[in-house]
Length: 257
Image (cartoon, rainbow, N blue to C red; front, side):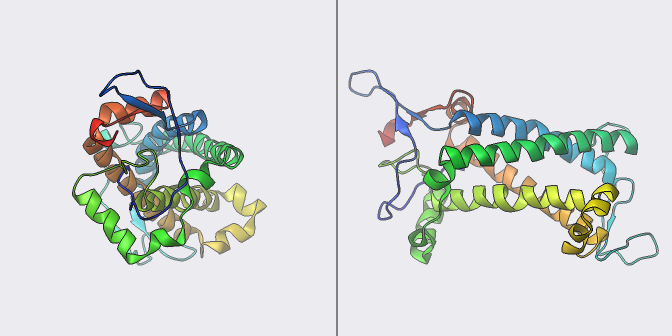
């Protein structure tokens, strides 16, 4: 989700420059993504993909959503969904028990990888250096500047191309601190075992059916984030962006040296 930053807003350096070969026009490389970020990213790619497919398989058992404690055929649903086709579900044919096994296993992967990423990001100060949102970045003029830069397909600040802009920070912070935690905790609230251990959890979301509805809404929001993220990766240059998420090093576009 890379885009340009208002040059008038101060930002701490987000990455250290790597040595570049001498000579005019030589490529400039910077170390953009540390190891913990890269590992967490690729774990999420696998976990979220499988959880969406298996989640749709589970939803096919009763594709209706309710608010409150209970939800069944006689109750008024706020949303009626069509059943997902087999090519969208895991497994490809209807099997509620197997979909639940896939879903619960990768829910553990999603939850513990998020915990590990948060701990490592506090230690290496990733949150403070790259994702901290300052008051000056939330002014209407700054936000409008970033929106115009996105619309013009200018994705990086030439003065600090590795820095995250405010729209990027808001999007990533929403995914890390709101969407994924909402998916995890509403999933726990739907578990009978967790209800027995933590009865306050289901009350926090207003009932089991409300937790199920919020779980679905958070999943849709995360899918929206992924679609926008992939679109901007393609527009920014998919080879360099994907390579940076594998090696950690990102090549600065020539017009931004």
